[in-house]
Amino acid sequence: MVQKAKKNEEIEKVVNVFQDYIMTSPYIEWLWSDKLGYILMQISIKKQDIGESRIISDADMLCWILLNEMAEDTIQAGGSEHAVFEAEPEELKQIRKTLQPYMNQLPEYTYLYEKLFKVI
Image (cartoon, rainbow, N blue to C red; front, side, top):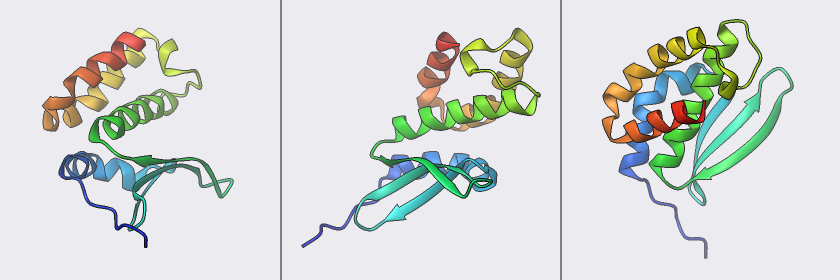
């Protein structure tokens, strides 16, 4: 018999804060599976392809992935194609501006926000 997955309040909180981003991103799909739980897929709409899928078991992991995805999207929106860790000072400023409203709603994950900028 298959055990039914359980919802997680902290993951739900992160999803609610990032809901608009998740819904509008052409690179992210968020699903619920009664068997597996939360599934985050990194997709390509153009190629009709799933690049990677992950079972999300904790809110920290989800928040980290979404912060990185948004940082990459911010760089691409500025016309660049390089990696986040190669961000220029102006790009860093724009990434901070983009992510700050999310961090204001999720202060418990500030350490991930700070970690992102240490990696960059």
